[in-house]
Image 1 (cartoon, rainbow, N blue to C red):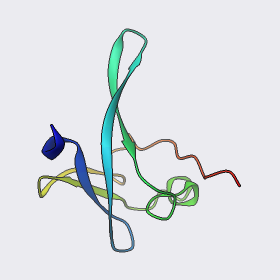
Image 2: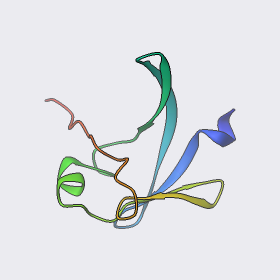
Image 3: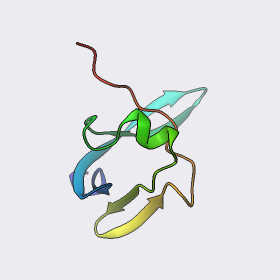
Image 4: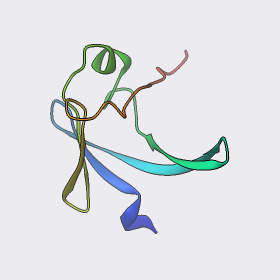
Length: 76
């Protein structure tokens, strides 16, 4: 359902992303998809505060929860 997959991301202003589920070791994991200008590798490495909102409810804050662990910069 669209309303349950699109989120707002607070990281130096607001951006958007969406969740997909992937199969990994017999379970489905939610994965956030967004662009590198919204969340990038330096944000993750420097433990920058990143907050996600789904349907206007806060669902995760990086400083509270280290579930945001990987980002992949675009290849040129």
